[in-house]
Image 1 (cartoon, one colour):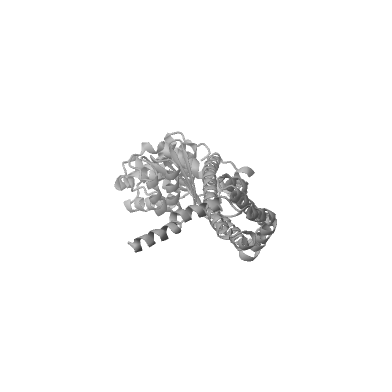
Image 2 (cartoon, rainbow, N blue to C red):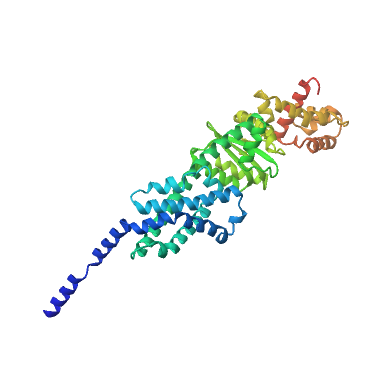
Length: 411
């Protein structure tokens, strides 16, 4: 019993842990007037020390431009001033955002990264902590240090919030800018403003450019577009993505393996045909690839067996029947003109071969030559044009090219 009484007396004679914590919290909530007065009086001195510490403690600080160094100095000063006001009234967390990040996100987030901003704020906290013994009065040092730690936590969360909002704004703006650039490419805009927009998106023209079009996938929100961009980034050095109503447009630069890469990227499109135009030398020439790709997509339904993706030049007949003048001119230039320029009767041999039902013997009889001669001439047609008359699809393209050549007055 005596022991219990002594223990009870002992417990009564000292405050509980909960009581001690409550007392300390109350002391932190109401800073000593002299400590607060010292903080306000030495605000300029502490700010100067913090700004000087930036130059000596951060290796990247001296490499910044003068305006960027000035912005960081202002950030440090605002941080210390905000701490003093927050220490005076901890119930006002709005000071953290309005004072320290007053210029964010337009200036601050463009000048320095989130990592750099947090390094600056850490130096501010370190300087205030070092000055705590000089500034605190009447055993208020522990409370001041704990206030600095709580404030640093608030600032870190505030910085992350500001930079996250800035990133979202930039992402939305970049998406709109990207759509404008793709629209300008499709229209053939070569203006200075167009060049500025392309440069703002970081396009550097690393290799040939190919435009690929098809139906947009079911998911076309920001997350879906980002997945498409990541997939394209695995195959192309540069990529622009745009959703135009129900159509997905990819502008691809510097493809590593064009045939293989385009085959892989067809998977990011929705159902239906996917068509790509020919490669061009620059993003400002991409309209040529885009025009042919879009014409091919409009006509692709006429060839149900078309591969996916399909080269726009493989759709010459369908495009011509659909009223595309580019395909007519391409067929004349790629097939009719070189065959007409040959002195070995390639046009007559090919025309006869097509008219008699693709028979080598019947063609030989019509032309009074040996079947091997017909075979040799048809092989020459394949070498010159890239289309093999012995293959049904290629023979159809060659037939349409001959018709286009005969219907072209100047050909």
